[in-house]
Image 1: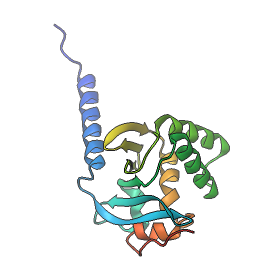
Image 2: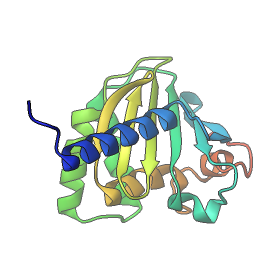
Image 3: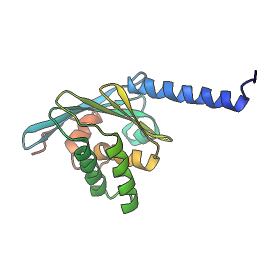
Length: 180
């Protein structure tokens, strides 16, 4: 009987540690709610949002550590529309090239499910690995692209976001004001 190779064992251990880290962050272990708010469009609630961060992280250093952003939808949306709208918000921030935009859109379309009222979509940002996504607590997959990951979470957290009231609420700076 062959003995396992050290490199195979090391790879397995690294994979298990990575999965454990992702699972812990998916459940927000080690993170606390930094802030929360709602996105409204012409008075209609689209979703509630919660940002989970390590307690010691400042807003200026947020992208240097792992964090989670959870959206709790208030209505029904198609996954393809969520992906398209996400790309439009990234483009408004002038992040990425047209080639990257197409690649990112394809990845989001591959992962993002259709949602209905009460569904939870959580993204977990990893500064050196990309982003993990979860739907109602179950893993959807990882987009292993750090440029995409930063661009995606910038939709909510960049100072130039289209929703500064929601950004302030997520960062614990103020209550979100309805976007009308």
